Amino acid sequence: MTPEFIRGNYTPHFNVGYHMEHIKNKNITVFGLARSGIAAAKKLLSLGAKVTISEIKPASGIDHSLLKELQKLRIDVELGGHSLKVVESAELIVVSPGIHLDIPVLEEARKKSIPVISEVELAYRLLKKPIIAVTGTNGKTTTTTLIGELLRAGGKKVAVAGNIGSPLVEVEDSNLDLIVAEISSYQLETISSFKPWISVLLNIQPDHLERHRTMEEYMAQKARIFMNQNGDDYIVYNQDDPRVREMVKNAKAKLVGFTKDHPEIITLPPSEIRIPGRHNLENALASAQAAYLCGAEEGTVADVLRSFPGVEHRIEFVSRVDGVEFYNDSKATNPDSTLVALDTFEGRNIILILGGRDKGVSLDVLSSKVRQRAKRVILLGEATARFKQALEKAGFGSIDLADSMDGAVRISFGSAGSGDIVLLSPACASFDMFSNFEERGKAFKQAVKSLNS
Image 1 (cartoon, one colour):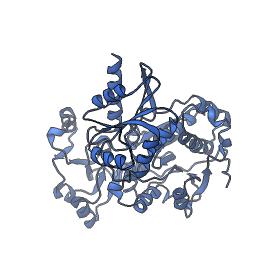
Image 2 (image 1 turned 180 degrees about the vertical axis):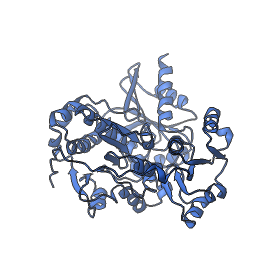
Image 3 (image 1 turned 30 degrees about the vertical axis):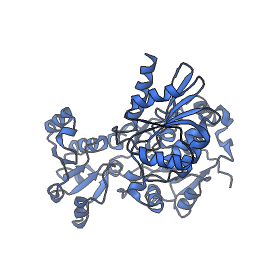
Image 4 (image 1 turned 90 degrees about the horizontal axis):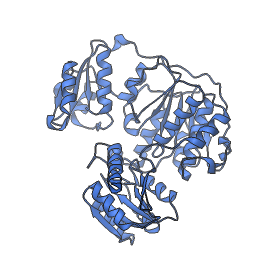
C-alpha cells in the first residue's frame, strides 16, 4: 500500500480545557518527586489546589534545596514511602511515570473511586491548543524534536515537551499554534480524556516488560494514545511494522501511513538526510507526514531534513581521539535500539559499551548481532551477569567488565585502534547508576573529554 501524500491547511480541533474551579481548593496528591511530579505539583498549586507530594525516597536521597523550595510553597511532602493517609485525604491523585500502578496505596485509591491520572492527562485538561503526540519503542525523541523543527521552519509557534525536555504540564499555550509531545507507555497508562489531534506511532519492539509483563499488554498501553481520537483526527503510522498495523486497524481516526518503500514523500533522496541510519529515514517520513498535515511545504521539509543534526544522546558524535571515534547512544535503553546503532556502523570496528538496569527482554538477537559486528564489549552495571552469559552463549568472548563509566571509556580506548568506533549503546535503563539516560550520556562525554586532556 502506497502512503497517502498529505498536504495541509487542515483545521485542527481545539481542546476544551478544564476550568480552574474544578481544581481550586481540592486536595490533590502527587506521587513522585521527579521532574514531572514537581511540575504537576507547582501547576496545581498555581491553580489553587491544596497539594501533597508522596515520595518513596527518604530525605537523604532528595536535594535539600528542592525540599526547602517546596516548604516555602507550602506543599506538604511525605518522604520514605507512600502512606494511606495521603490517599484518604485526596480528591485526585496525579502519578509520575515511574510509579507502578499496582502498589497497595493506589489500589486502595481505586477502591475508594479516587481518580488516578498521569501528569500528561492533567496537562491535557488544562491545554487548549492542538497536540501532536508521538509514541513507539524507538525514535520518539528524534521524531518529536524533528516535527517541532519542521513546524517552526514553516512559521508555526510550537512547544516541544512531554517525555522530552519540559513536562507537558509546564507548557503555557496561549501564544502557541501547536504542541508536539513525546509520550511513553508509562504516561499512557493513566490517561482518560487525553486526545491528540495527530498521533504518531513509530514502531513496537519488546521493551518495558519488567513493568508491562507481556508484549500484548505493552501494545495495549501504547494503543491508548489514539483511544479517544475520532474521524476529525489523524494517526500517522509505520506501515512496515506488523505490530503497528495490527494496532491501528480498528482505530476511528484517519490513517496516514508511511513506509521506507516509498520515501518520495520527503521529496529528497534519503542519502541527503543529515542524520544517519535507516531508522532515521523512518523518523523523517513520520515527521514529514505529521508536518504536511499541519500545512508544511515540501521545500521546507526538505531543507530541514538536510540540516537537522539529530538529538543529544542518540548516536551522537562526541569526539575523535587519536583516530578513535566516540559516539554517545545513551538513549538506547532497549536491545532493539542498540541493534539500530550497530547497523548504522556496519563495516566498522566497534567497541561496544553495554549494560545498566535490566528490562527483562530477550538478549538472543542482540547477542547474535554483537558477535557479527562488535570487536569487543565492555559491560557495565546491574545487568552485567546476564549480558555476559547471553554473549558467551552466542559465541562471543571478547568481553571486559567495568565498574564505572570512566573505567568503561578507558578500557574501550585501550582496546581501540585508529579508525575504530567506541559506542555507548547500553540496551538497558540507566537507573542502576544514573538518574536518567541524559546523566549517563553526559558522564560518557565527560569521560571521553578526560581522554583528550
